[in-house]
Amino acid sequence: MHNDQRNEIELRSVTLGYPGKRVFSDLNLSIRPGRLTAFCGPNGCGKSTALRAMRALLPADAGLVLLRDTPITDLPVRALAREIAMLTQSPTAPGELSVEQLVTLGRYAHRRAFTSAAGSDRTAVTNALRETNLADMADRPIGTLSGGQLQRVWIAMVLAQASPVILLDEPTNHLDIAHALEVLALVRRLGAQEGKTVVVVLHDLNLAARFADDIVFFRGGEVAGSGPVEEVFRQELIQDVFGIECIVRQEEVSQRPFCVPIAACPGRRDRLVQD
Amino acid sequence: MRAASPVYFSTPVASRIMVLALCVSVVCLLGLAGVALGSSGMPLNRVVSAILGMGERSDGIIIWSLRMPRLLMAGLSGVALALAGFILQRATRNELASPAVLGIVDGAALGVMCFLFMFSNESNALVVSIMWQPLAAALGGIFFASVVIILAVRTEAPPLRTILYGVALGALAKAGVTLFLVDGPVHRASQAAMWLAGSVYQARWADVEVMAMVLVILVPLTFLFSRRMDQLQLDEISAQASGLPVRSTQLMLFALAAFLTAAAVSFAGAIGFVGLMAPHVARLILPGRAGTQMLAAALVGGAMVMAADIVVRILFAPLEVPAGAVTAVIGAPYFLFILIRAGRVHA
Image (cartoon, rainbow over all chains, first blue to last red):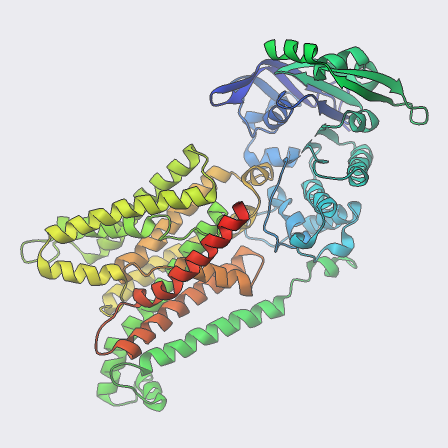
């Protein structure tokens, strides 16, 4: 769909942070098109901050954030929303909204003013509900759903936005393992089907190794390593990034690596903090 | 695709229309009661023939020059306050928000007091047109609302703290109003006190016309924002990510709410809690999209103030008790109730 040589999203020497707290001083990062990239790292390492910068929700203090070589600050809010959708870490909406109403909110950037939902909006919403297995719950108020169902609704809303790039901030938070697997398999399948570029912040290393094409490891406001899973999912790097003792093995069926954590490693931790 | 559509998109249009029709008929009934009841009751057949201009001349005068402007002002100010409350609750995603709670009402009152004292001559006659009074109220309301909003944004205040800012700023404005009252001529002060409590009994046709004109401009503007208000049901980050410029939308909505409140306050005084309760009732009877819910809120708000004014006329005649007293008697305990509930949720 896109030229494979080009980066979908690129951060060039970006300085980022919040008032009184700088998170990144010189962040360089590129996301490849049509791939599922996982952001991993310990708490407070800047994963979510980097993700927000990529969606222009947090302005870069210096440097450039590029979407296919265009600075995202050049794009109007609605145009950017048609390019990049994002599911935030803990989205909220009134419980009385129906599933269908919430998913339709994802169409905002496509809808023309003062018109009711157009055919293309209805098609997108219907498809998003079907993809996420929510077709028979369309009229249920979201307040009556379970955590796993609700997360699927939010993902359906993001899908309805029909953007080539999707950013997901810890979509498996608060989900049990079955629902987490289900959500990630869905993201994986949809991404592959439609050639979408997907970036997911994930806490669980093994979920990242299982579902991602590329991994970016963050450590204390720096990129500690990034690249295809098979290249960067290495014992030494993971031990370093998380300050733990661990073993990395390969799972035989999927040929994917996995990590067995052994123990926290205070020495490594201290070195991290000093950094 | 088409075949599957009806399942998801069949909004219960019929039931929505039914609910709205019910609201309209309640407003109509209250309207009839409003012109029929008063210090001298009037049977309905005389009311109807007077409205149609076929009744006795005295009936016509009572209805057309005394009761009608009062009734219309009650209805219109209720509409304005309800819409303002609705906008604020959507813009802040806070069910506790209302024009009074965010300090807009007191700010508007202070604006009007400033206006009255700056543009009156020695004999207490206004030296400029009364048409400017709503603008003065709007300026006062917008000023205090902006201070509350800036404070809330700067300190990233959660809903309950935002309310506290509003209460504090409102108290400040109220203190200013009191100073003006104490400092001003006695008869003007008593007039102002009555007006501040929220009364429509002095309403004249000229006031009704200005109020109606203001609403003719503001109400369509409000409805232009209904999709944006729907989008604001999402948390701010999700709304922004979906393509809504959240900050600028909120600012425009605050300005709209301030103007609506100011219009109501400048003519009918501080009729409290309508802006809080009417949107809640509307959400209960018509959950879902902002557009229809807003219509319902406007109708409910109009009905509330009309009903309150009828109650004070029946219960306290010949005394003129402000309608705001009735809405406050019902509204204040309700506000306490949702405050307690909100406190539990946040705990």
